[in-house]
Image 1: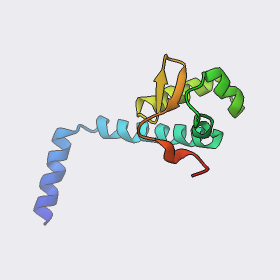
Image 2: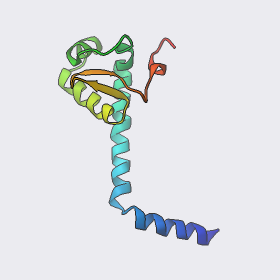
Image 3: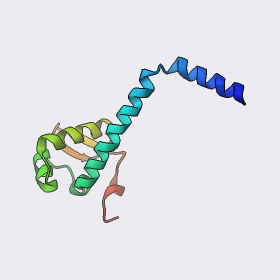
Length: 103
């Protein structure tokens, strides 16, 4: 069992150089933080009826438009929200309708 574990660890080191796993850890941290911000602001609930302008969404959630746009853009890269016409976020395919509070 130890030899198998050592072989897999060696293979992992050859396939994934150290900076790549470290980058994944760091990126995972900001993704979790961005998702937490969107959840606290109630972004998914605000988008339950369909896409809205970032300005409208910022007014509804009580947030700054430029900051909210950056958070949504980051989450859109992971499919959590969809970018429609660059500034009309919508609930993305990975998040779906299960995100709304009433369900």
